Amino acid sequence: MMEKLLELFRLLIEPTGVLLVLILLMILNNYIFSKFRSSTANGNIVKRSIATFLALIGGLAFILALPINHTLKGQILSFLGIIISAGIALSSTTVLGNLIAGFMNNSMNRFHNGDLISIGDFQGRVTRKSAFHTEMQLEDSNFVTIPNLYMASNPVKLTRKSNTVIATSVSLGYDVPRTRIEDALKSAALETGLKDPYVYITSLGDYSVVYKIHGFLADSSKFFSTSSLLNGNVMDTLHENNIEIASPSFMNQRRVDDRKFIPPSQSEPAETEDTAGETAPEDLVFDEAIKSEEEENKRKLLQKIAKKQAYYKTKLKETRDQQKITTIEAAQQRLDELKTKIEKQIEEEKEEKGEK
Image (cartoon, rainbow, N blue to C red; front, side, top):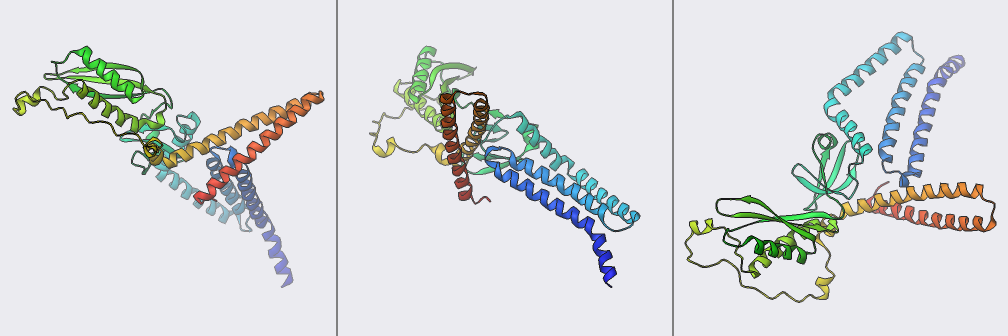
């Protein structure tokens, strides 16, 4: 009986060793990426890819180490190969395609967290990029998940963070001089806070002319509220200049004599302390996207700090001047304090989100 137990123990040593090595490698992989996750933007993607590769190799090694005959091992490996091949074949158009598209998007750096993009019928700010999909927060503050394969095969419009163009169109009659209209539209753009406004005449219709006013917005984080404000200022400015926003075809549909449909002017409400410090709608709508952008910026800053620390470390080895050594050590200490502060902020934010 004792001999049989010893023989069984001897046979199980090799597969048990394979399992222990696999477990240690998994723990090591998790430890490495948990230690450096604050400075690695795509750490989760790489971590999961390595874990999947280790699990596959470990499974094959475990099967080969089992104390069974070669024929049965071959049958098990063949069955495993069929399952893997079938899984790849069935998911090649979706899962594998999204995975490849995800790596392509991340390697090309087409956009980052917090960027304002539009694709198809969706427009919003990016909150998260993963191996298989990209998450956006839309202008109604809700979220949409878009497969990476769709994003790779469709044009993505990226709005510049600064000096992006805001525009709106308005249809006016032929009876109003063009220069008068252009001056009024430029005045509305300047009142909105846009720089260097310019006007295009985009269409000459049978009954009206379509004017399009453009202007440069310094901060695109206020894109939607500024677009709305521009529309409002265009209406107000045209009405103040006695320009009716109604094409002559309106007269052909309803006989209203010579009446002009311009509302009476109203005095603007005085700005109070509450309205002066009012939070912009984009700050409320894109709250998660803003947090995601701030987190990514902190990770980039940590990468810059790591490069600076490596540079100082090299300079410290090369210099013999005690004054320079003291200066470099002081700079290193400041960088260490800044790194610790940023890493603590990232950890606190992750705890608030419930991330482990």
